[in-house]
Figure 1 (cartoon, rainbow, N blue to C red):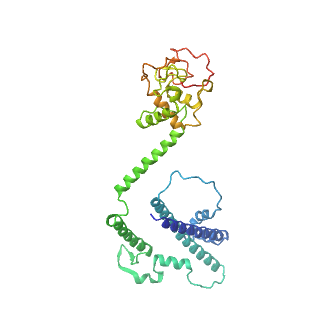
Figure 2 (spheres, helix red, strand yellow):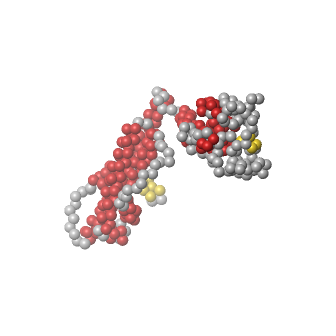
Figure 3 (tube, rainbow, N blue to C red):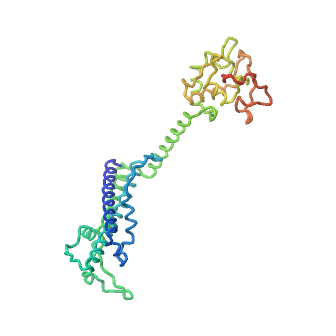
Length: 355
């Protein structure tokens, strides 16, 4: 859809809203003057809905902006604005009808009190309604009355209202435009193509949402990744930052600073949560810095998952075990949990250190 069309529809909706508010104020003033109230008590036509219309004239208060739950595309916005404009136009016609009825009732009440009124002919609202409906005057009804009757009920040969005719012709024009754009020159997608495009957009939205979740992961919500892409990214991060202390194969050696990461022994608990926490906060007193300032949560998750994937891959030259054996089970998912098959660390106040 062209954005210009939506801007035009917005402008038309604003103009209609301003006119509706103005007419609502007029109706409120007429009702408060007493003339419309007297006409209502005497059976004035249509004034029963005046209180409802008065609610449309309430003062507008500034409200805090609330962002939409999701963005509308141009086509959805177009139909939304069309619906709003049609709804406002219906309200406008109803208001004009009530203004005319209230004015006529007040005029009748004044005439009954003896006030002299000067006939000025139909107003602009009445002329507009006459053009929209093309309703015949009461004195012309005998000329358009059909000859047949049903149980004494006679029928008037009224013409179709112009608004209905315009809508009918508009639907035909729109059908021709749709046929040409979709099936002739092929610039609008058919339903199947639109469905495929929306599904692709949905997949992109899901990927973007998952990316935000990955950026917000921490030691309490992290899970071990098993897909090849994540493990490949973790290996690249490990090779760049971790090999100087743990070796290229993560198994260490007799001369390496860091412990062996490929056996079943862990100094500060195994499992993805403990490894993530150790990488994130480090252990400065043992020479391991905190990596949270240099690596994103997603990168720490990837490298922790890669380290866990290396279990049991150490060569014969791997560094001797350090720490306690770790078994992943529901009762032992954090290094602070006391396990019945292991002895608690003597110094539990130390910061977590990798291995």
